[in-house]
Structure formats: structure tokens, C-alpha cells
Figure 1 (cartoon, rainbow, N blue to C red):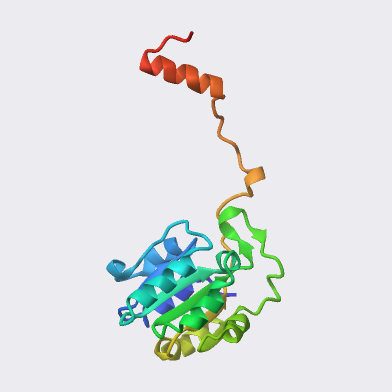
Figure 2 (figure 1 turned 30 degrees about the vertical axis):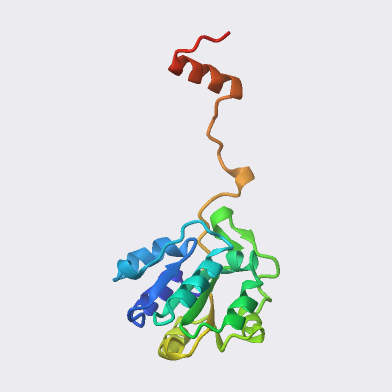
Length: 196
């Protein structure tokens, strides 16, 4: 497995003027290495829908290279998008999947069948023009020029080290909140309305 920051550092050297869309935890790491933030598009928490948005951008800007850094958790929420992308054949689209085998943003829960899914194989069989799979940084770097020159849609699956951001929801320390009645009384007091 590769550190995602190493993936981004290597990619930055081959980026050219591509529009880059980082998703999930990758957004923070990408901002640390990107040298052209004017061509970065952060779609925030659109988990499961970012791939569709990136496809729309690639179709709308056919003369621009569009690179999406996706996550397997998000892709699995909308797996049918692979067939849609393959059907539309955006020649300017490069789809890079950072596969950490877990849902890192929600507590590190394992992705079902994480070790056995061949995402590059799924993309290739769906109809992507080319598909790659990497678990070694040197192999990825060696192939980056070819990846960026390939006619899209191109799919790249990279196994990365998980960086779990949160405890699972049921294990998080809860912030005390006011009851509904306390909230109404507080709002009434703030507005000068007497409780009646």
C-alpha cells in the first residue's frame, strides 16, 4: 500500500494543466501539494455523487483534461457510474481511485470484500479505454506519463494506507445538546416571548 500524499506528490509532477477534483480525505492532502489551486475543484461532501459531477465536467469541457481522485467507498455508492462513463467515452477523463479498503471518513468500517474487488478490472470490463492497478509507488510513477497520455476514459486503482478520520458514530463522544423543551424556552427568552 502507498501513502496517499506520495501519490499526490508524484501526480503533481505529471499534472500539467489538468483540472483536478479530489474527494473525501484526499482533498486535504491534495491542497498540500497542488501548485495550481485555480484548477482544483473541491466538491466537498458529495460522497457517491462526485464521480457523476466529474463526468459532467469532462463532458462539458472536452478540451480540458479532467482528473478525479475518487475513493472506493464513494464509488461503491454509485457503481453504475462506471457503465455511464464507459458509454459516454470522455476522452479527456482520468479516474483515479484511492482504495484504502475502509470508510475512513465515518470511522474506518471495512468496505465489504475489500481485498478481493478488482476495481480496474470492473472499469475495463465496463468499457473504459484503459485501466491500471497499483500497489507500489514506483510502478505508479513509472506509468504516470502513459496514464496522462492515454485517451480516456482511463481508470487507475491504487491501494493506499487508510487514514481513519473519525471514530464510528456510535463510539464518538457526544456533545451534550439541549432538549426540545429547553431549546424552545431559550428561544422564547431570546425573543422576549413569555412562556404561556
